[in-house]
Picture 1: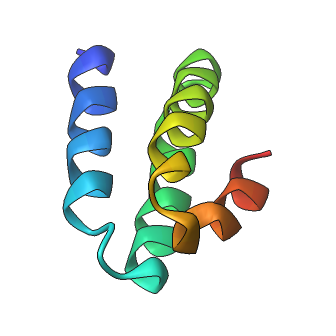
Picture 2 (picture 1 turned 90 degrees about the vertical axis):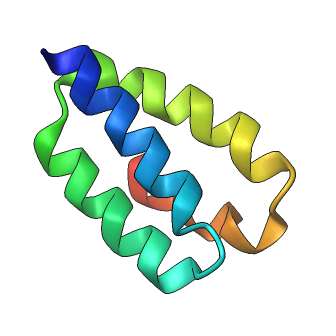
Length: 64
C-alpha cells in the first residue's frame, strides 16, 4: 500500500513541476505522509529530477 502512495507522490510532483511554489507545497505534504525510508527514496529521486529543472533546486533544502 505504501508503495502506491510513494508512486502517486512522484506522479503529483511531476505534474506540478511547472510551478515551483506548488511543487514545494506538494513536497511538504509528501514529507508528512511518507515513511522515513520512502523519504530517502524521494530525496534520491528529487536529485535526479531537479537536475533537469534548475528552478526546482530550492526544494532540495526542504527534504534535507
